[in-house]
Every structure is written in structure tokens, then in C-alpha cells.
Image (tube, rainbow, N blue to C red; front, side):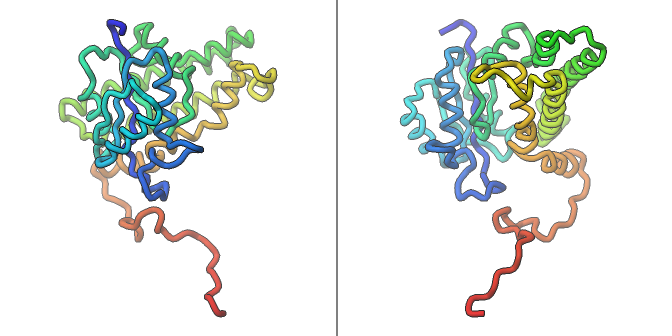
Length: 286
């Protein structure tokens, strides 16, 4: 074990209601495994991760232990009951971390395709002393394509950097506000919304900087252009996973700003039971 340990919190406490599943979202099948199993396997196999805490829906602690046993995941230290919101689930998991945990990576189990390369980039940023890992991909792209001195490229790189700086400041402000009670727990939706919208914009910036390199690349090679192109195709994931942007806006409006809720005929109806704009079926026997 290193003196400064790096731990991961895998948030798997979502209800799955919006997904229309009969079980919590993280426990839905993803190929031959569950979503949470796919995420855990990535962190378990990464040499830089010392331990893992999993936040699960209350009552699913035993099932999580069985999944860990099937994976042979020796790094999982605990499976804790999550809260009513993502922020509460993360807080419950943070309370279980050992004093030796210096860096903490928080990952949503609903994003099972995150690879070890992403963990590497986050850990590299933290090792450099950043409050949160900085996204240097736009700089790398502009240098790789020889356009680092182009005024348009420099403006795009500056925009991506400004988004990162604003995000770090926003996260710090909201975190402090929630800790001292000046902001409600639901204020976490502010950071979720900004993170999603800025991430989508940064994928657009990287696509522009990559040019044709984001469309074609040598077969089997991992290139910066390929990464930019694939990220652009997945750009809306952060706007949906963990609660869509529209849901975050509603939370901010109603629970943070205290604005009145919009009237909705299906407000208390589970998403799977909400009526769709489907063609009427022919009555049997007609």
C-alpha cells in the first residue's frame, strides 16, 4: 500500500424508475453482467486503486456482496446504503473511507464503459496538484495537429480551459454551501447540470480541433482524433446519466430556488406507466 492511497466510490443507488426496470438501475443486465459489475471490474483491475466503496439501494447490500464475490473483487471494502439523492449517496460512502484515503474518485455505475485510460488521466491530474483533474485533451489535439498557434484554435482551447476553471470554482462554492447549511443538499444539481452542459460543449470543441482526424484513423490505433470522434458520439451521456438536464433544472427551480412546480397530470405516476403517444390497439374480437 502507498502512503497516500487512492480510493474509488462507485455510486449504484439509483432506483431505475425512469429506466422502467423492475430493479435498481445499477443491477440491470449489461451484456452478461450487471452495470455495477462492469464498473467495479474496471476499478478492481486498476493498479492505482487501493480500495472501493459502493453505494447501493437500501436492502441490496447482500446482493452487492454476492456480485463482489463473483468478481473476486478484493478491493471492495464496504457496500453502504445510499440516500435519497446522489449527493447523499456519495456522502454516505465518504463516511466509510479510511483515514489513509488521500484521493477519492467518484464514478456512476450507470457508466460502465469508462476505461482504465480515463482513470489514468484523472489520477495524473490529481498527482499534479489539481483540485480536480484538468482536461488537457484540447491542448494535446491542437499541438498534435500543428494548430497550436492558430488564433481560432487558441480561442477554443481557452474556452475549454475557462469551463474547467468555472466548474472547479462552482463545485467548491456549492460544496462549502452544502457543508455549512447555507445551501440545501439539492444544490448538488447545480454542479451536475453545469458539468453535463460543459462536457457536451468541450466534446464539440475537441471535434472541431481534431478535424478529419476525428472521422478516420489508422485501423486498430488509439489516436487523439479517434478519442475526440468517439467522445462526440457519446456526448449526451452526461446529460442523461444520473438524472437528465431537465430533471436537474426542475430540482434547482423547485427545491433550491423555491419556485412553484408545474402542473402535471402524471406527476405521481411511475415513468413506466406514463401514457405514450402510441397508436391505439384494436380491441380483441373486433
